[in-house]
Image (cartoon, rainbow, N blue to C red; front, side):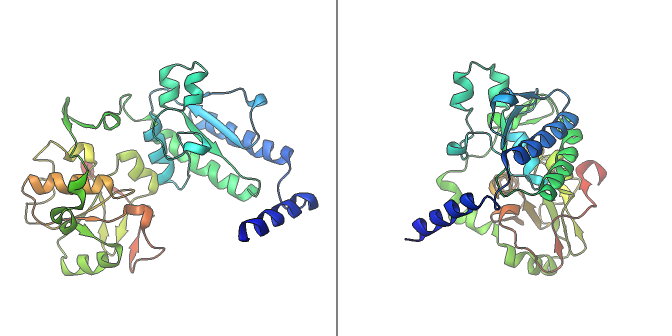
Length: 298
């Protein structure tokens, strides 16, 4: 019954014509986003002629930047985009449709879909354009190859396999590494010498504006730097120094925590669920601050 009632409300709104943006308005918003994307990524390629596409959708590729990297950095500035079609947004594999269109492999593996809805506002489009403009310079500065896409971290010209997260991610050792958001501020207060580490890639860290909690400013030390490099944290902490690791979803921070534990860092914690599950406010913690530290600045 609730579904039928909701459908009736949508059909009524369509009949009135005063709820959803018109096709012309949506096309104008899409064209505004297109211009912004071209400005941010001069080498961008759109994967379908815009005159033949929906006024609510853009599908594009950027040479040298994978879909995964694009998604991570867009997410860091608050934009939710997808690497697949609307019916397979959770998949990270290239779109079957783009493959069937005969697009070159670099376009299918870097394709991103940006969609807007019929309730979108001009204010939201303006905010999206500001965010996109921030992503462009950051992503263009990245190396051409993203080793993380192949399940390896690159350090000093060599690659090292990342820790696998399967059944082991639920065992007692992994659970002991976990810190929940509700516990974070208390943990930092009880451990004033703790170091807050953002293990996302540098572009994600900079795009989000950095992380703060009380007097702590997160240091950016990407997972690709930590993994396979036992001395990665020697300039930051001795093995007994408490470390709190944060990433977007909690996956990379757990990988880094397991790796560091194996390297002898016994006081390691990772924040469960990452920034995706962060509360609106956590005491004195600010997860969108302007000041940001990178490993090279420490």
